[in-house]
Length: 310
Image (cartoon, rainbow, N blue to C red):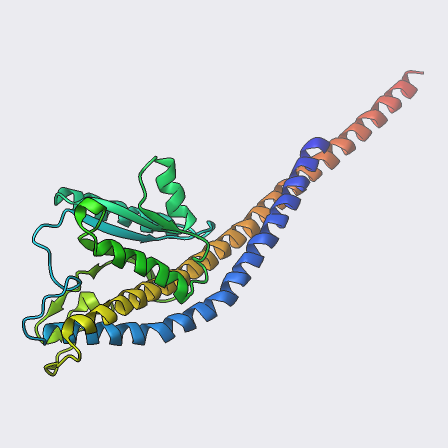
């Protein structure tokens, strides 16, 4: 009985120590998510406006054929950028991204396309390394607080590979799998195609906007100075970098929200476990007291019986 009681008390101390850690992580995530949400709100209008401008300029220019907006006749290799987390304890956040990435990879391979993985976050890197899969490039260390320089490094590499020939390791399409922050309780895994840019005559496509809204008004016809190729050469890389930066910010806010929710659930579970272990410890203590009383009464009865025999 005494050993059982000591075991319960040790488990209670262990769970209480774990509860302090999960509670601290919950509070840290709650404090950081405010800044992450502000960064998303600041970045989204710029990314949306730049996408609208590039799409409108490309769709309203006459006889413009630019490699970043022109569909290739034969798509042989597609790049898939997966935005996961560097750390765990965020529920199914990274698992959902990896699952959607697997679904997209299977779909592209069914279409006869080779897939080139580009990974963001240690969770995605570990997932591919464990399965001994080839990775084209990977970036780690900034999933919780991405900077524009990180997005630019990713965008520059993707645009560089998009401009290469297939024999040199180039890609013909670029897809991004990331988690879109809707609210503190809702985060959605989304897939967007960055390049070639999808445009519709006179309007911006909802898939290019990334927010489910399309422009209904007609856009003006653009004149380019010094020329359309030079303008889009400078504008489209900025579009790619801004969209990737916005995706990283959305993923960062989603990761923090998922971690706060997961840590709150862990803290609540720790509370319930402490209550359960406390009841079991009280039962064990009561059983120990009852046994001691029984032994005392039994000893007293034995002494009384021996005295009566004399």
